[in-house]
Image 1 (cartoon, one colour):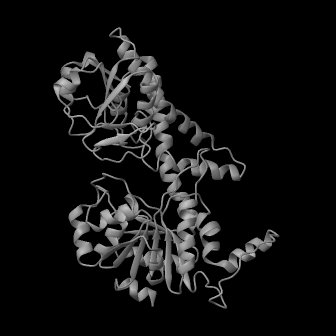
Image 2 (cartoon, helix red, strand yellow):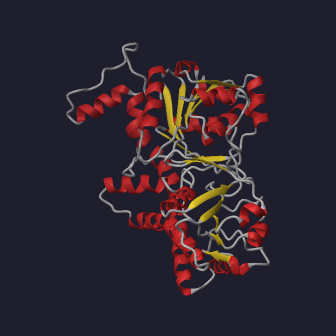
Image 3 (tube, helix red, strand yellow):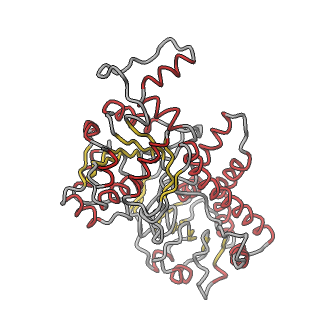
Length: 456
C-alpha cells in the first residue's frame, strides 16, 4: 500500500525541522506532487512561513506561497499530525555540547513524538547529520520498544520500558514500518547543485526499508545511491565533511608557512590547480563556518574515541582551522602597526559576517570570533554585509550593517575582509581605506593600491 502511495505521489509526507535542509526538502517533495506537512517547534517560524515568507535563500517566497496556496504544503507546530503521515523526514539540528560531544536532544525529542504516533505502513527517514550508529542504536529502539526491552535486558537493566498498551504485538521494522538514514547534502548558495540534482545516499535498517526509502526519493531526486546499512550512510556523510575540513586545515597551514616564507599562497594555489589530475584546490580563510564543516568531524572523532582510537588527523585539522581567527587578529595588529597605531582605540570595518560569499547564513561564522578578539583588544567595530542586516554579539549588543560609502571607509583605521561577497566594490574599498586585511583574496583584481593590501 505504501509503495503505491509513494509511486503515485498520493502519500502524505511530513518534514520535522524547517531550517535550511527541512524547508528545501519540504518544497522539493511538494513540487513533485505530494501533500506535505511541515512541523517545527518554533511558532514564529511557522507563522512566517504561512505568510509565504521564506528565511532560506534557496527557497523563493513565490514558490513557497504557491505551494501553500494550492494546499500542497501545510504548516504546524502540532505533532499530532504525525498520526496522518505516511512518510516522515527528520531534519532537526545536531549541534555539539560545550565539551564538543554530540547533542542528540533534538533528534530524540522528534523521535519520541514519532514513536507516540507510529503506525503501520509508515516510512521514517533521519536526515540530520550524526555519528555512525544513531539510526539503529538510538532511533530504532525508541520506535520499536520490544527491541529496546531486549537490549536493556541484555544489559541487565532493572528498569525496562513498558510496551505500548494499544497493541499486543509492537510494530516491527521492515515489516510494519520502515526506517532509513539519508544524509542531507544541502549547500546554501550553490547555483549548480541543489536538492533535486544532487545524488541521494540511502541506507535502510532492512533491505525493504532501503527499497521503500529509495522509491520515495526517486520521486523528486534525479539519482539515488543505496548502501547496505544506515551506519554506512551516516559514515559517508561524515567522510564528505571531514574531507573538506582536513583539506581546509592543510591549506590553512600552507598559508601560515607561506606567510613565514613571504610567498603568495593564492598564486601558489592557482598554479597548482592547473594540474588536471591528483590535485583539488582548497582555499585558506579566517576559519571554518556553516553548520557542517566545523561540527561534523567532531562527531567522527568522538565516535572514534568510543572505539579506543584517537583521530589525530581530524583533530589537528580542527586545531589549525580554529587558530585562524587569532592569525587574522595578528594581521590586523600588523596592519595598524604599519600606521603607528595601536589596536586599542582603533575603528575597524568588517566586510562580511556570513560564513561564505553571497549568502546570509551566519551559522558558525568565523567572523564572530574575529570580531570578539578585536573587541577584546579595545577596538571599535562597524560592519557591512549585503546579506546580513544585523548581528547580535555575545553580550547582547546589536550592530547594523552600514551602507558602504567612501566616507565610511575613510573613517576607519583598517578594513578587514572576512567574506568576499560579489556585490562589494573592492576598488572603492582599497581606494579609500588606510589599509586592508584581505582574508579571502577578494582584492585580487584591484589594480591600484596593492601596497595597502595585506593578505593571509
